[in-house]
Amino acid sequence: MRSPRGILTTLLLVVLLAAAGGVVVALKTRLPHPTVADRDQLLRWLAVRDLSTESVDLQRTLGLRLEEEFGRGDGIDWQSLAERLDESRRQRVWDNVLVLIEPWLIEKTTLYFELAPSERAEYIDRFIDTIGVFRGVDTIRPAAESFGRGGLLKVLAGQVESWKTQPGSPPTWQIEQFLREVKVQWVRRKLAEYWSALGSMELQDLWRRR
Image: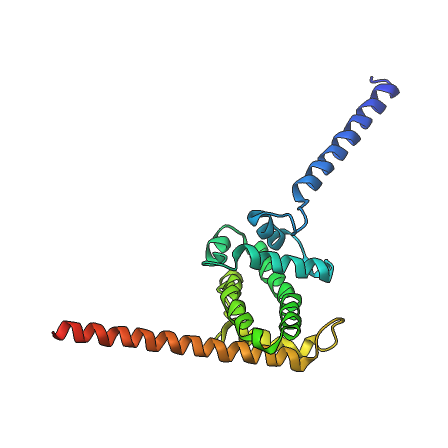
């Protein structure tokens, strides 16, 4: 029969091992602040944390860091990310993106109206270039429910009403005007691309007829 001292020693060892295991789990789930996180760590923020419980400042910072890291080029490969995650993680990413869009867009709107009118057109172009970071994000949603016609801008416009009472938000008319300017410029750019492509086709046709 084991002595009381031996039993106490065993229990203490179990407690210490359990505590050590908890520390390991904590270390595995701890993420660096978005300001110093690399690309993989930024995506882990989306997949493992409930961002609705984080501060608005952290949400805004994370959104801006995602734009900084993925806003150029092809953006985030949401389809590839979806294939590596189970359904619960995909739902988490989707929910977190919707959380981030609000402070991110509010920040963008605020900066837009701080600019001189002569600088705003260039700012809109940069915004359109970097918004690609969220393009295709609907492929991550387990329900496979897309944004539909109008894409991300349609979703943003639909959320403006719920942002009226948010602390620190710009006036609703500013958000609406900013989105309107973005949409108008996006259409202009698409038309320019269309006419450019059409002109190239006509030139190619003329060359073939020579």
